[in-house]
Image (tube, rainbow, N blue to C red; front, side, top):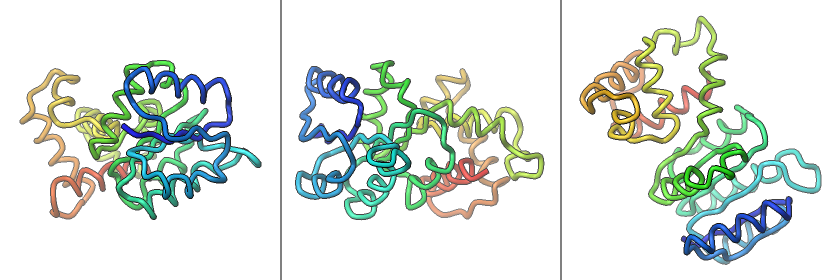
Length: 214
């Protein structure tokens, strides 16, 4: 993959460059802030952009705003956003337009090299990757009156796995159930969340968005 990085921590930025190069990827640019990220992405046309949410000068949401703009201007580019902490609203903003070629991971995942590299591959392939800790906290925060409260424990577990970007086959393997059981539970989730019967992929995206907005 051809990658552009934006991370203000020199240690993490250089570590990511080394990791990606060792894995055979091409790092087109490694930026210390988000100021030039959108322009650099438009000029270099990477396969994927990896960016920290909180970047100089204010360390608030510069990276997120750049990521959202990149997704609007260059939808063919994958975007992986890194965050120090779980910030549910940021994840929802990132996925607001669509849930293709996008990811939201906590920085701790970078240390888990296989998981980080797998996330890049899944995003590059057109999928969405949501950090499992973000998903876990969403489950905890679900209000009693929320539509998610209609789901059975199994349906909630399947939706949680879906929000993490897993395919039906991967969900079945993780939960030790059949693929048909996964499909049955997902159809129940779609019905209980009152998602329109458009394409199956669109309903998967809508389910994840509903989950993030809960």
